[in-house]
Image (cartoon, rainbow, N blue to C red; front, side, top):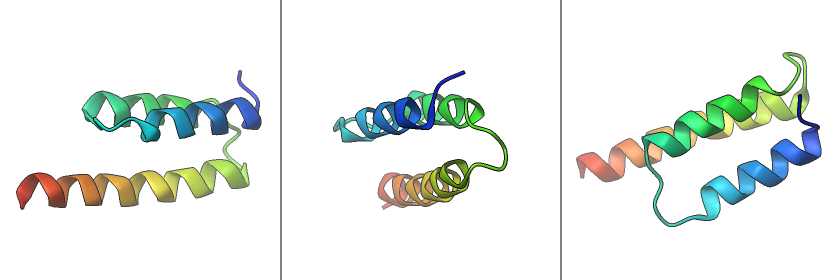
Amino acid sequence: MLTESEVSRSWNRLFKSKGITEDTFENAENLLTELRPESPLRHRLSNELEELKKLHASRINA
């Protein structure tokens, strides 16, 4: 189990790379599972992930 701080650092590293792929999203989902279900950070990052997926899909389809 990772701490919220560790998840946050790993999350930032994931999305700072220029090449966001399906693996990036899978890794992000895995990070979310490290957080307690009631964690405010988990809720915030889950919402952020959904937005990032939408943006990524719109860029691919454009």
